[in-house]
Length: 314
Image (cartoon, rainbow, N blue to C red):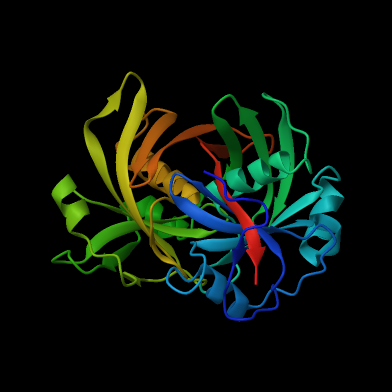
């Protein structure tokens, strides 16, 4: 459903008053998006918090600004390695903090650019998108978009290699701390394996889980339950819930789904498949491991992108 183009949303006055916006989501992970090609907008944390507030604002897990890469220092650096990365996904969590990347967000971001005529991308074609987590290659498919999220790696490699876990996580609703594995997808994640669906359902993720040790920039925390059997028709299957730093529990997290698949695959051993199906409260995303152009193992994330409304901020 799409509102009329001149729909207006009244908020407390912000620096973004009068700015057009679009609301979109990827498997329920939702965003307010604004286009600012020439970098003319001043977007502060207070404005982001007001707009993303689900009771007093539009409501979203984060705010994404579409800006040409040349107008940001980080974007100009990335243009040196890939001059085709015209657009930068300037992403902020709902608390106003900057974030490196969002796997669901980048799909919605590209869909916005395509829908607005700012990017030409035919089915099967690929676009380079600049983010604070580096350049991401996004391919358009018949039912959504697939994103090469780049390489994954252990945040605490020595501990992970020796023990298969590197930290302990406490969360409301779980009786005892659980061992976990911390994985970077360009942003930090800590993955906790649970034994059964009832444990996953019991976790209370209104407040942030306590992670020890905590990665230096904080961490997103994923709780996963493998299906039994884990692999069906060559595809690994897990269920996941996530607490995103700076946001809280969300219906989906793209980089989190990649981290959850990477951790589960590591725990499953050498015979684990390369393709995974990750079920989140907001739907299903696909994760695939493959050789990257840099010689490292990359992770691709696929799923839908939906634009649901447009309007103007008052």
